[in-house]
Image (tube, rainbow, N blue to C red):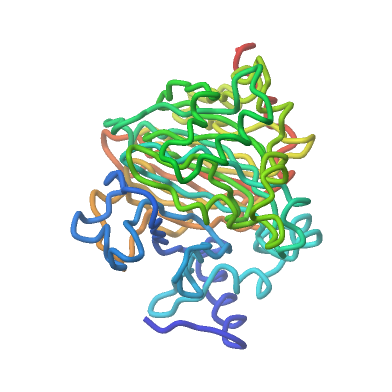
Length: 414
């Protein structure tokens, strides 16, 4: 397949945009992590989880509608970038954004960011990830990076098996002192530094989620997670050993200024202490799906699965659309979205949709698309072509697109 770059992208992107009536087909976008063990539930062929070599680590992530480069050691320039496909040509979504501008991502996002500033992914691990945080923009701006708020949703279709630890540690137990965390960092090379002694684990349940702002410590568990997030890959790992596997100290200070890498007080102060010690953490961060309107009698339900604001801002939101067999509906949104098919087969606009059972590395699929802002505003027809199985789509949106989205905790009022 020919890769289009440079001046050729404008013509290729416009041609694909017109042919798809504002919808772009995206190719699977696989990302490895050298410090984690794949959970083997991403529908990737069993022989392909180490397709990039064991030195790069196993593939435990698939990124959706991404214009963000994966910050992995030894990664090629396009790792983490989604490719749009038009017959025998491909071009990155990152390059398509300036080629198509507001028609693709919406007037508000184009005017403010001149890029698609968010992405989503599946991450799938056999066990937990080290207790870590993602810095806020003020903490990494000098490094030319941005902060990373994120959210989780645990799709039932991929979570029939919970793997080794379907729990997540969040924050720090009330009463934890800065000195306690500082001592944990000091003990980094002495084995388990004990950071989880000061954290609380929450059982994860398929079909629910969490909203997690920057500077919140969290050790994600082993459920397959759909994760809308800001377009950044910054983090700081605070746990020295996970399931007997050492965490290199370099991952604690990966996104810390050079002169602060051994400044333990600086590293401790990366933590948002007020939020991490919140005695009502679950109430302020837990998400349950909320139907948008009363449409079940029409054969479909569109549910909010990621919603709420962080620091007064809506960085992203996400919905889960379920269309019953034989039903055709028109989907209208206020902005562009990245879409992944979770179940069933059907059609969106002119494009077929089908959830694959297994994918070879490098193979093209028909399960992922990007709905442009133009198409979303005009409305796209979604049809379930199956006879018995619901068609289920997850889609995520950019910042401030859905002011009507619920607030955290709104599910309690239902």
